[in-house]
Structure formats: structure tokens, C-alpha cells
Length: 613
Image (cartoon, rainbow, N blue to C red; front, side, top):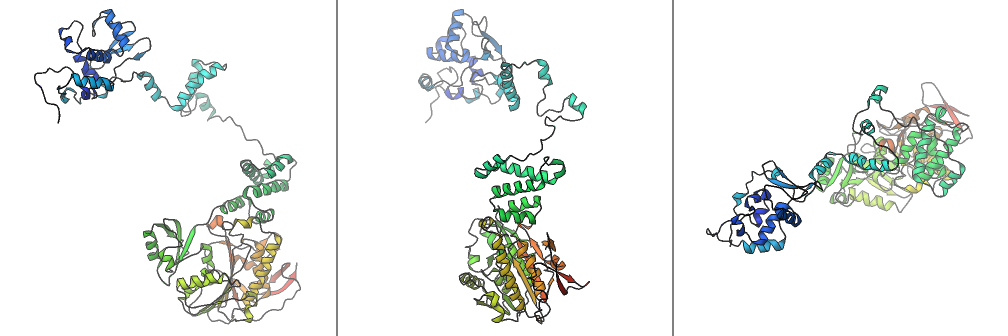
């Protein structure tokens, strides 16, 4: 229930709600009585005080105004008060001493509002008294702030305000400011000065960086005990810059080996590598590429999966995973079954599609050896080191569950994962065996194709196993290389050279060491009647035909190397052999082949004889 209108009562001014509306202060002037007005008694004492407070800004100014005996809107105002008209003729008071307007608040306190409600009971507040035509320019500043200073502050940029604060400080420190210096100053956003334009461009304070100087031995010892990684990283950048233009930037009396030794120690400290492995990598990569390789090993490779075409198609699998909140894309033009996962709202290894065997979580580099092997239907294929079963299931997928696959692994514990994956993926043409691969030709042979994913040092998968950075030494590399040679010769002996569709062998490792890749392949070329053929992969870097003091077979160009920093996949090496004879040639030298260099007839890939270097 609202208040009822009493037409007998006279309106005495704006009510509490109307005063809060726009233009209340300017309209209030119409209701303020002048001095000596007979109708002034209509307002109560409290109402007159509130009206005067709104008009004069404070009680003190009101007392001074009364003592002067002047009229409110005409005559002489108290000392320090100036009457100024606004745009529409409304007048306000200005404090000359302080330079600020003294203005009325837009509403009174709660107690005053309650008292006013009791006095104005029954009075109707007409909304048409406060028209919406009053613009914001008619509003009086309610809080008495210095609008001029605020407007100037808004116009100034933060850097200009900071400069204004800095000028008095510099003046206090002894600096002298003048109008000339202010005029000569140029803001950071302004253009060049006349002098700079005459010189042809902006002047730079730093003429040139000082040449890098190797730190003394004491600082090096301090970095070894408590390294400052930021300083070490800066020194790495400086040394690499010096080595790029060594003749011009090197320190007088310093040799290149000193810079390289310092760089190797800093890289080992910053990236947490052992001296042996880092020394091998420095020989393998140029300096700029070495930094990229080390940085790539600090970042995990993208999650990839392979569609099991025995149960579904890649398009259907991708749509099903997208519906489950998986963000994915095709792996690349080179793969018809691969998908790369960017992010997922569900565990990618526990989806119903995964449990149903629609896909296999598999690295992109692990798909390449099977593509190079190119298995055909109804063939007999050997996967000599099959665990955990990703490559074996891919072979069965390409064979469409025809023929026979013999999946072998020397580790019985890892064979459990092979059995589980093959059952989940629906592979039915595979036999699982547990033999030492080096003795395999004595068990069974005559395969059309053989895949050998040999055990290695794992230098290509450092992002998965960071322990490789420090736990590998020369003995580990040579031990792996020796095992790989034995397995490779055994795999070659298991291939049937007279196969109508095959006679091929693919050798691969997840290592980037030359001792485990080109060295082993070159050894097999000298020990068996095989030759290298193209892998069928249209990307990847060529293998080495010469590395430092070693020289390898020219056909090693057909092998492929993959690196994390260039291909965004695990480091991998792939070589494909074609066996042309089942006979085992007799070695013509007593050397192990490491220190020998084969000689070839022009236009022929077959080796004629071997001479020691």
C-alpha cells in the first residue's frame, strides 16, 4: 500500500527518492526561500538547515553567510566564496582559498531521511519534476573533488605522470629543470628529434657489446659447486656466438678447444647430462643443432595412436573420440592410420574404444619400421624382439590376419603385455615364442620378412627416460653394439633369400649413436650377402656414409635417421636389407670389420674384397 494523495497539502520540495534522481541539486534551488520571505516559515528548522547545507556546502559557510546579511542568490558572499553560474544558469559556490568547489551531497544521512519522512508524510513525489532531459553536464560534483586536476590527470599517460613526479626529485638531487630542457624532451611515443633526423636515425647509447671473455678458474669452480643456471645459460649463448665467428670474436690467446671444453661443462650443468654422452652428442651435431636437440629432449613427444583397421576405420574412430572430448588430428600424410592427441577430457588409455581394441597407443616413430617392412598377405614374418606388441599388431593389421607371424622376445615378463595387446586388438595369426634371438636360426628359419627392433642405449628417447643422460658410458654403447651385431646376423640368417615375395629385413633402433646404427649396418654388409635398399619413407635424414675417421658403405644413404628436434618424434634409425643369397661368405680378413673399408666395383653394390685401412 502506498501513500494516499492529499490535495490540500502544498508541495514543499523534492522528497528523499526524488533527491537521488538526476538534477536534484539544480532543481532544489527553486525551493530555497530567500531571506525575509514570508513563506520561509513553511519549512521546518531541520529542513532549512538541510537546504542551506545543500546550497552552501557546510554549516560554517552558512553561518558566515548569515552574519553577512546578504541574500542567498544576490549580493556579497562570505570571504573566500565566489558565486559561479553553470551552463543552465544554476549557481554554485567556489572556495577561492582551496580552489575547490564546495558542493552538496546527493543525499542526507539515514537519520535525517527518517526525520524528513515523518515531516513529509502524505506528500506525493512527482516524477515529472525531474525530467530525463537533464544531462550529466547539469550534475554538480557531489564529492567536492577538483575536476580540473582530475581531467588533466586523465589526459596524461602513466609514463608522463611518472615523469612529473620524477622532476621534483631530480631537482632536489641537484638537477636543474628549465623550460628549455622540458621542450627538448621527447616522450617514448613521439618521433625523433631534429638532431636525430639530421643524423639519419635514432641514436643508440650502446655502441657495441663487449666481447665475451672466458671466466677465470675460480668462477668455474664456484659454478661447479653451486651453479647459477641463468648465468650458465647466458654463458652458453655467448660461447656459441663466439664459436660461430671464432676468428673475429675469440679472446686473444684462447684456443677453440678451451671454448669447447667450457661449453661442454656448461651444457652438462644446465641440461644435467653426463660428460660422456654430451661429448658424443657434440661430435654428432653442429652447435646450433645440438642446442635444439637438447631442448627437444626436455619436452615430451606428442601422444599418438594407431587405428586398428581390423575392427574400425580411422574416420569412425576419430569421430567417436571427438564425441568423448578428445582433441585430435591426423598424424600426417605419411600415415593412413595414425592420430595425434593434443588434449583429452578422458583418459586416452581407458576409453571404451581402447578396451574394445579399436586403437593402440604407439609412438609415431614406432610405426615407421613396419611401413618400411611392407608386409604382404599370406607371408611368414618374424618379429624377433616384439615386446610390447605394437609393431606385431601393426604387421597383422597390414596382413589382414592372414599368413603367420612369429612374435619372439627374450624377456618372458614383457611377453605378457604382448599377449594382452594381441587379444585386445583381435590378432589371430600370431604365434608367441620365448627364445634368445641370437640362437634363432637353429630353431626355425625360412621367413619371407624379418623385423629386428634391436635393444639399444635409448639415446633417442631421452624425453621418456631422462636417466639415460647420466647412466650411459662407453662400455654400455659398445656392449649394445656387440649384441646388435649378433642379433642382426641371426636375423639375416633367418630370412629366405629365395622367397618370391620377400627376402627383406628391417633393422631399427631407438638410438642416434653411430656405433649402434651405421657401424652395425656396415658390419652386416661385410659379413652377409645382403645389400641396402630404399626404406620407402619419403622423409627423414640420410644415414652417415662417413663419420669423423670412419668410412661406411655408400649405400648407407638409403638408411633413415629421425630426430626429436626436426621431426617431433623419438630419435630413430631404420635400415632395410635385401638378402640375395643364403650362403654365408667367408671373411677374408681377421679384423672385426670395424677398422676395414670395403672396395667396390664401379656400378655394382656387391663387395669384391676388403682391405685393412
